[in-house]
Length: 147
Image 1 (cartoon, helix red, strand yellow):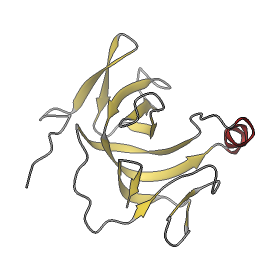
Image 2 (cartoon, one colour):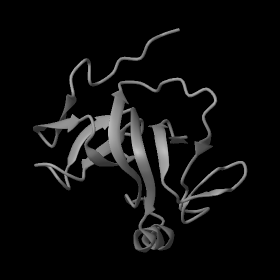
Image 3 (cartoon, one colour):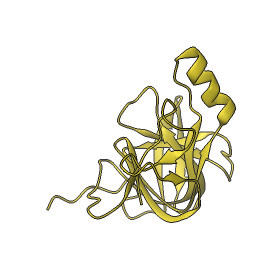
């Protein structure tokens, strides 16, 4: 089995170039993770604490979080529905534990997603079960979240 490289590579942080500035993501940092609208395969990682609070501090194709809550701004979702134009308004918030350069295997994990045209919350596309409670761990990659 192919091993996917960790962005942390033995350190407690990794660096990304964000708007011509090098920023750091730290293991254990409280972050918000959302789909990057300009880089389809990537997720943006926004710091919720530290010196870069409120700023994007990194990008990854696969992000693992713990103590995760699912957030959706209903006002911004309404704007998506009325304008038919994407904006960032849904994300996972939690503690950063891992990040990878490529997707990892998620065998046996439960898949959930978010689609503003279908629901105002994260949900399982098979059962339509709503996910708005805090969960212990998630893997965010491809087009969804794996619990």
